[in-house]
Image 1 (tube, rainbow, N blue to C red):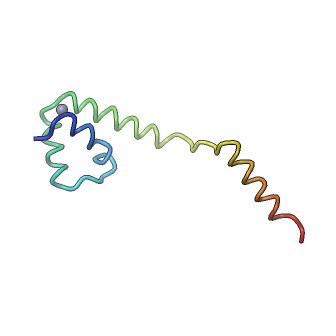
Image 2: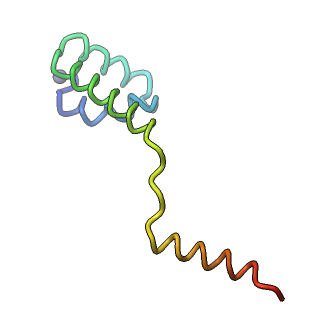
Image 3: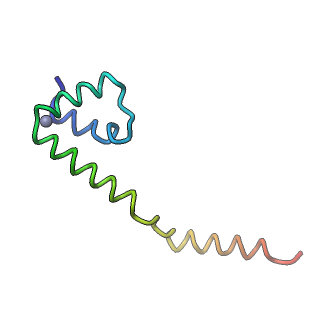
Length: 78
Ligand SMILES: [Zn+2]
């Protein structure tokens, strides 16, 4: 039987569909018996969903400057 600590370590893999079948069964078994982990899973799922909806962060200024410079250099005639 997995402990709550092991479950919390597996949640991300579970949500990403990375858990092998055997692990998933153990995961479900724990979930069926542990309200705390069910709540944790629900929170994580909401968090992942939210993170997926966020727009990509703009690149930091130094990256932007480098890109701009590279672009400008490329457009230089000759
Ligand atoms: Zn638990």
